[in-house]
Length: 366
Ligand code: NAI
Ligand code: MG
Image (cartoon, rainbow, N blue to C red):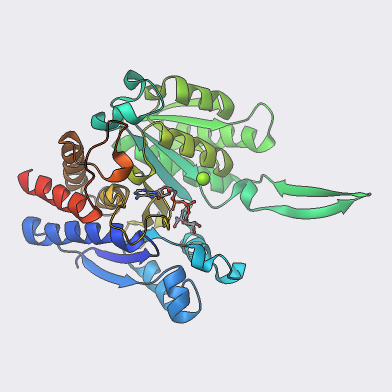
């Protein structure tokens, strides 16, 4: 059977950037003889408009069956007034929860042509290529007890950082597997100096390493020191594995080492399905960008690079993934820029679809 993909383009610029990915999927069919079975469906505000819910049960069921889900973005001002239970984000949260996507891969990669864009010195970021693996389904955002309670004569806000051994072990494995496909190097970050969950995190990651991944180089770092090191010399890292809260902060920070939100892909992986592929959802880090939606200004590269991650992690097509990434690198080196990538020197930006066409042309030339 052909590999299967469910496209959920969503709201705002989601469908605009996804249109460029669809061109690339088409290119693989006609030029490389690699055909994907693609179905499209609704998520987020558009699903609410059509069905009164941001994700129908039927769409949820489809997402569970396919080899990979590609998501654009959800949300927009039109939906801000909705009840929390039907907010667009709830569609995305439901996908993550029911697919049990516990491992969130956030690459921070610096294309040489954009190194001047970083807030850091060029030599600190040029050629940077690291991945932060963030635990996504547990930890302090979910632990019980949680809530705002009354204690004596004042209120107290409570969240609980809670990790079970198996939750730590599975995300550790995911990071070690990733490291084996890359440079065999993992740095685990927590706060074992002040947190019990951090002590357990460090122990379990070390145990999984010693039993199953002794070939991978493993180091441990306190997350606050890790944040400093990420700014100081990010190239010392390759794969970083960390919990939900620290991963949220560190991945956003690492991402900004490299420039625009319009460039950042992500993958969220779960346990393997029957065919051995992990459940997987790929999406750009950015949102639906209502301020530029419908104007042809969106940068499709984050979404394109998310598709490249799907090629690599869901379809074992590492060479084809690299081909897409090289094509992106080439158009950037040629000076093709959407508006978000224009430096102070200015120039004429290309549209979303012109950027997509330039990537296709670079693929043709590859
Ligand atoms: P945003 O990521 O949509 O936009 C932030 C800024 O970056 C905006 O100025 C936007 O124009 C720009 N930007 C984002 N993506 C871009 C691209 N591909 N090319 C060029 N410029 C780009 O975040 P914001 O404004 O906080 O949220 C807007 C809506 O998106 C909200 O409804 C929010 O809830 C939703 N959202 C959805 C996410 C998702 O679907 N995973 C993630 C983040 C926000
Ligand atoms: Mg965040």
